[in-house]
Length: 113
Image (tube, helix red, strand yellow):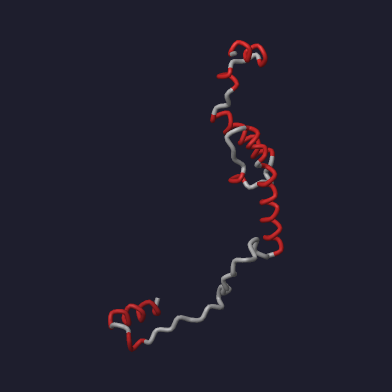
């Protein structure tokens, strides 16, 4: 049967096998051809799997871009942590009566410089 496969394809089964290096090279080409895709989502062990992962990766990228431009998070089920703009945070006050003498001296010298 090996002889028959060689005549049909012109190559032996070993020559038809795609190596990991070949898959990595094809993945690099796919990544360069589709900069509008999430690179981590383009994966597979065959060329067909790599090509099939392009559309979901492009869709994910489009969702992220859309959510970033509108300011809404992509996952609406997750609660959004409140944020305090810089400069609006409450001041951290320390009662000097509770500080050790060495710390009082250090803070007093730091004010002078």
